[in-house]
Length: 81
Image (cartoon, rainbow, N blue to C red; front, side):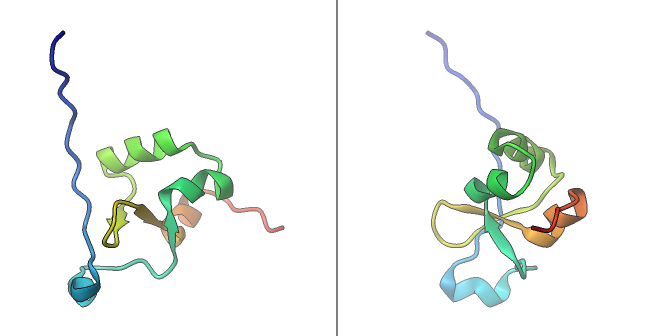
C-alpha cells in the first residue's frame, strides 16, 4: 500500500497570549462545523475554499477552525427569520 500525500494548509493561529498580534481577528467568528447550519454550503466545500484561499480561516488556540460571518454574509444572501 502506497503513501498518500495530503496538501498542507496553514491557518493563522491566535493564542490567548498573542491575540493582539493577529493581523485581523474576525469581529463575528463562526465555527466551521456550525457554518452548514447557517449557510447553504457543506463543510467539505468550505474546506476546499479555505485551501484555495477563497475564504479565510482562523484557529484560536485549539483545533477548531473559525470563519468570519461578515465574509460569509458577503458571499451568501442570508434570509431573515
